[in-house]
Image (cartoon, rainbow, N blue to C red; front, top):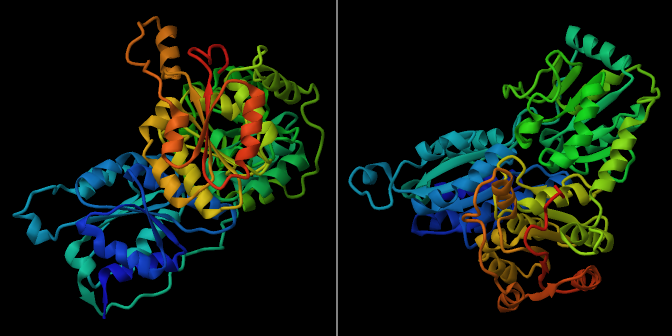
Length: 542
């Protein structure tokens, strides 16, 4: 005999889960205890959203090492569930596998007891791949389904409501080892569609590839890099796909999707290309400039694990497959040849570098990002919060690593960068992690500095201090609206860092920033670098 909570925990452990995050309440105590007994370390956070992002950070670190286990988030009924809506929606849009465990009262009790009680499943269904309610006698099968759904195709969140009576109730139901159905078997495209795609690619003089979140989730960096290098295909990525090809490679054109300044160099390549290859590219990561970026009927080959229904652009040939077998089938027997005889991609790469250099006066947000990239090790993982700084740092920060720059790229939500970085550092303690965040974003999730202290994680936090919601303020001015609701008072962030047990310092020049960043690498607590850049510091830069 075992409890329902023990069955849930055992299945998650069998699937490879070793961490769980959240804030407990009375309705989830049995589940939390079971997770700890099964071997999942439970980490208390200050907000459920942060717990979900920490779970994502762990997942990215483990996925880079070849492990495929979903993150685990725990919340109590009512306000705990409602608090987590943002991070669950993020997992839905950003294709993050997440098991969201929630406590609830038993069905009979819910008929006559209403305090904090509402229909969790109805609230969550629009932003999860599936929602289950645990029942004794079917927990093992339910968990098998839930984990499989979270991981298969485009990954995403799956919700499991666990009644108290089920969590604490005894059952003789056996627990089996988790095995992802079909794991290791891949469909190889064939037939007329493949033949037509091969004919298009074989004759292309100006091929260009765009890779996105699905390529990241498939771990297809090696295959994409080998393909691009063999056939001299320049590669554009979404921000989340940065590093699929080492960004120091001459074929790497960097990240795209949010910066009009970058788009003016990248979109013309698509307009003149005679073969656009979409490699696990999901336009949910892109802004409006990437809606219909080429005309109807353009020579586009898409390789996708799912059928696309977004309507963002047209495609001539679709290969529904994972990338590795599809790229192999597409290129089989085709000889490498020179491409882009006029050198347009290389010219675009040089213009991008020129457009995103450090400020001539020696200080500003671009100077911050260039200085930190110069002194931090190449293998450093960076996370970026939403805001103007994110657009600029995503253009400047080069990474050789897949999952080397983490952010909320589809939902674009604030207060994600710090917990993403914390989760990654928790799972991979030897790799340096730097968090890029605006002052408003840091204040939104400020309580997690206490979590950072309690976990003893030496993360570097770079906060860009301009006392304004810079991106929104810029949009106000561009649309000739009055300044309203975007500016706020200053906070002594270094003092706060010290209060929370870390090292904090004001930064006003690049040399001081480099020194402090280098010192941070050997510190055993977190370091907060408060870079004062002044208001309107992003004008003309993004």
